[in-house]
Length: 206
Image (cartoon, rainbow, N blue to C red):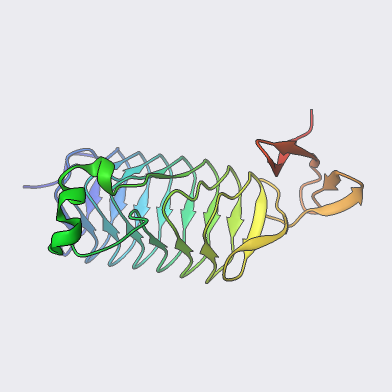
């Protein structure tokens, strides 16, 4: 069956979902399962896998070989780099193992949701562990393993990922002008560092 008008699905891609937004492109060997939701004007690269239950917002780039599983919710304008791996089970075992089979009869027994907020960027081959909320405009470095929540505008890197600095909405690393006041050398925006929910976050100054 041909894709709906306004959606491009490469002839070598497998798109089983009918919840794909206009303007979205799905390239060769990508697999979008039935029940996955993808917004408008997205780009899904070769060999990407989008599982049933995954939700992707508008204008999202999912590069080649990225894996987006059930329970993963991605906001608008997010960049998911090549080979990014999400996870959704904090105690993974084979569902055929008798000791855990009963836990997998209901999603509540194993599924741990993860949310990536608007404008965030996930570098190539990074791994996002279950429940590690990624804040708006945060940037995860290539190869990082994210084990906990990442504040908005944070730059994290390493294994496990640690806070290395702050980034602007435009993607440039911020420079500290004075205590708790940060400036973007590329676009000129100013930010104020403040505490939120027990961790440091960055909010755009008024």
